[in-house]
Length: 217
Image (cartoon, rainbow, N blue to C red; front, side, top):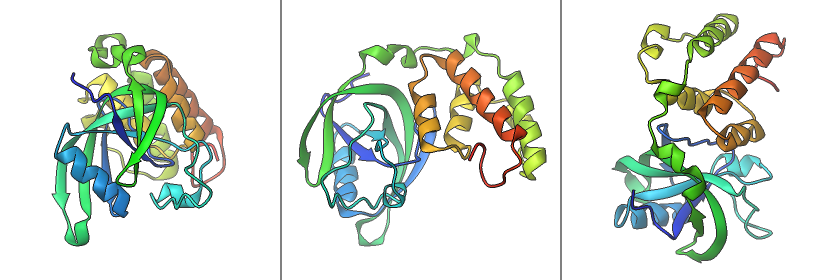
């Protein structure tokens, strides 16, 4: 795909985007409204990346950069805007479809308030290949069923069984209530098999825990 060589990024703690995953976002801060406007007018691509040190403000997309821009993880994921809706006061609702991970080579000067990087997509070229045949998610669905029963969460398991394996794996990794560092580890997993094993371990740890309100914390 014709990915941009200068990639606008949206740093946001706790928001994980993975290939084939769909991530809804409410864009309201001025600099990120600028970002979406520019992306919609050009190549449709933007990157999601987490700050290394999470803060409550980052989790809401409200980072003020009081002491300078927060340091970011090197690995993020580029997404293509699949749907968008303009809202009053210049806000947007967008849905990003994850396409491919990237490694930041360098950060560029900001553009209209938002951050940009030079990305390297080459290490993650495998994200663009069909990997469904290499993945068996039966054990993951079984663990999710036990988790949903334990937590009293309703999950349509029959429908999940119809989802392509990689889309199911990445969708669960994105949506389950994991800690930011755990989400980053899932993002950086070498391949879908490694990510599957890691997510299954996190689910099993959550099932073994007596704590409420999260899988592992």
